Image (cartoon, rainbow, N blue to C red; front, side, top):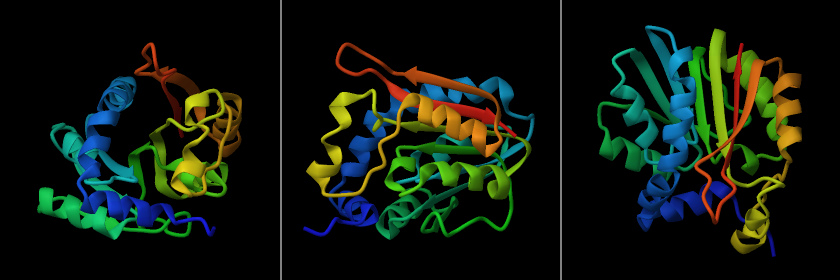
Length: 204
């Protein structure tokens, strides 16, 4: 059976309201991710959320008085339409990665549960560093699908979609190879049934 495109699955989920569940399910991890970057953000900064879904993280960032400009991008047109409906004044764009890149660079890149859908996510880290991020910029990304999280290993078959499975060390090496400095790796929002979202943090 031919594998489905992740963007098609997310469009389906947007249409049946599953994005609300994703927002709730990822909220704890994202809250901890934003806490990790809090002290590193400038007094005035621009931000982009990669794989923004219904825009919930963008809306969260827009409430930060220091955030002068926030943009959300997603490969699912239906998710973008939903984000625009929820936040008519927000900036949301349909964009297919890795080929798309922004016309301007940002001080802060955030991404949750996006990178492993790419064929070569480590190459995308290099793109983020070179093409997306301002000097002294901050990058943070979270993934739940990774080698050490055995409970996630069935996801590609269950959803019939491509996912790239990497280890914690693979991700750390990928961050360093991309050029990031002060790289940190965390596992956040862990509980008795979940070893945590794998989070990678780095500066340019």
